Structure formats: C-alpha cells, structure tokens
Amino acid sequence: MLVNASYQPGDFFVSTVTDLCPNTTYEFSAWVLNVMKPFFPSIRPNLTFRIEKPDGTVLASFDSGDVPVSGTPTWLQYGFQFITPVDNAQIVLRLRNNAPGGQGNDLALDDITFRPCGAKITAEIQNSATDTIDVCEGNTNIYTFSGSASSQYQSPVYHWQLSTDKGTTWNDIPGATTTSYVRMPTPKPGKYWYRLSVVDASVTAFTSCRIASNFLVINVHPFPVADAGPDRVYIKGYPVTIAATATGENVSYTWSPSLYLSDPASLNPVATPPVDMTYTLFVKSAFNCFNEDIMKVKAVGGLFIPNAFTPNGDGLNDQWQIPYLDIGFDADVKIFNRWGGMVYHAGAAKVSWDGTLNNIPQPSGVYIYLITFKDQTLPEIKGVLTLIR
Image 1 (cartoon, rainbow, N blue to C red):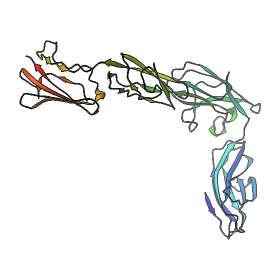
Image 2 (image 1 turned 60 degrees about the vertical axis):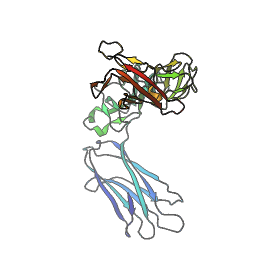
Image 3 (image 1 turned 90 degrees about the horizontal axis):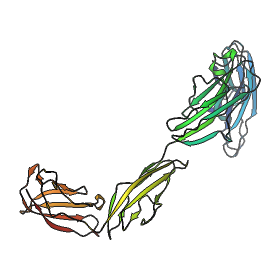
Image 4 (image 1 turned 30 degrees about the vertical axis):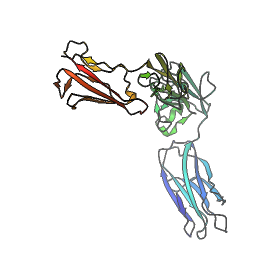
C-alpha cells in the first residue's frame, strides 16, 4: 500500500478483524518504508498503530516515532502484542499518521500480520539430523515424527497436518492426534510437508487458535527417464550416431560399456563397433535416483539387397526387404517398372514392398531399384530385382 499523506494528521487505514482466538495474546506487525529520498529535508511519517474494540476501547497501541529516511529503500518492521477480548468480539485496527502533510510524509505499507503468540512447539524426524529428507519414488522407509509443546497449555489437543503445495494449504491427517506420527511410504513422487498443530481444548472450535510447529519435509523424487534410443546398424566405414534422451532433476548420464563410443558421457555418441554390441544408458538425478535403458548396435560389412522375391502369400519371401537398412541412414528407396513408372517408394522408413501398386498386384518381371542417402558420404545404390509369381 502506498500512502500519500494528507495535510492534516489523521487515520489512513481502518479495518475490522474477526474470528481471532479469544483471550489470547496476538502479535501485530507491519512493514513500513519511507519512500522519500534523503537529498533534501522532508517531513517524516510518524505512525500510531492502535487495536480497539468496536466501541472505541483501546486494547493496545504503539507509536513508531519518526520513520527514518535512507539512500536506498529500507523496510522497517513495527509491531507489538495485545490480548483479544474473552468474548471473541471483533477488533478494529486503526493506523494513524501523526505528522502533517506537505513536503514528504509519504510511505509504503506491506505485510500486515496477525498471529497468535502461543507456547513454543517443536517437531523432528526421529534419528535424523535434519528436518528435510530426500528419497526416490518406491522408497519403503518408514519415518517417525515426534513433537512437543511447552507446559503453557492446560489441556493441549494435537493434530498432525500435511501440505502437498509447499505450505499454501494444510489438511489434518485423520487419526494423527498424538505427539508422534508414523509416516508410511508414499506411493507417488511429491513434496510432502508435515507439522504438528496444538490448541487448548477450551478453544478447539476456533481454527485461528491453533499454533503450529516447524515443518518436516519428505521430498519423494521421481526416477529420471532414460531412453537409449532405437537400435542401430553400423556399416563398416559409416559411423552411426546413437539417438538417446535423458530427462529428470539435473541428470547426469554415462554409457556402459564405453567401447567404440566417441564419448560415453554424451547422449548422442558416435558408435563404430567391429562386432555387435549392447549398450546400457545409465541416468542419475541430483538426488541419486537411477534409471537405465539398453540399445543394440549391429555391425555389418555392408548392405545385402535381395535380387528376387515371391509375393504368393505362402509366408515365405512375400516382401522385398533390405535387412539392416537403418532408418538413421535416411535412405530414399524407389522401385521402377520396365517403363520407368515408380511402383514403390520409402523415404527414411522401413523398406517392405509386397509387389503391389495401389493394392493392385504387379506382374512378374524385372524391376529397377534406386537407393540414395541424405548423407552424401554414402554412395548411391542401383540394381535390379525380379518379382516371381
């Protein structure tokens, strides 16, 4: 809130507050900023914070004195304590600027806060030196929380609470009404925040009367995703690049074995194995959650291109295919009949011709195939094949 003071001192903020805990000590505080610059004399804000009953009876008040000015914006917190009426009546918050307006006396106000001042409550994770524990999904550890409140409560009522949105909203855990709570493993990843709330039995009907402990946090992290990519074919003299991906929380990765890979710490190493190899991609997140995936590289001396096939439906040699023609080669395969008409085309895809064109069986005879590659280092291949019916 930005306040441009009037010329006469007076109230600039009045608000009615309800549903506070009766007969309870509360802390009221607010942050104030003198927005003027110190380069020339100016009037400084001078504030009075007052808590009243609706009839004007003053419950408590506090004078800030002159709010100082500084070369850089400096927020100052002002606050005091007061006791709410025993009948839980409404209270009125009144803020008054005692300084006159004119040159200066401009201020900003932020974070007006009410909070009950109850007994100190502490919570801890047993056998843990910290309030935060990081685990991976699937972890089966059971954690016991314990809490305590000082002896100021005559008849304390306890309830453990859970938040799954980093403390924005809290929900009571059914049945968790003692000073200890056993947390069972959580089936899915998430950030699980816990706290112990305490209230005296005499005012349990007022949710605003609850006092909460420090947070206990169990972070359940998902496994990283490891995808080693499709299997590849390495034709001697023509290296292939592995197309792997890895995602997760600040992941690192490596390949095993590292033999014949240009960089085992890369997701896309170049592979040149002289024999068939199976590679495993290991992925680890920043929280030591692991995953893995495998892929295979088949090593061949060259492409074998069949020169005949028999599409007669007997289940044997019914399609013309090119074994080991890796999709990663980005090959463009075309087949022509004797009159130059194209009867089949496959671009960067698996080659499998069943001897038809638009579902019409093509006649027996000799056909010409042409294979070109996007990678210009791979030579064009041209040849003939025979369709036999």
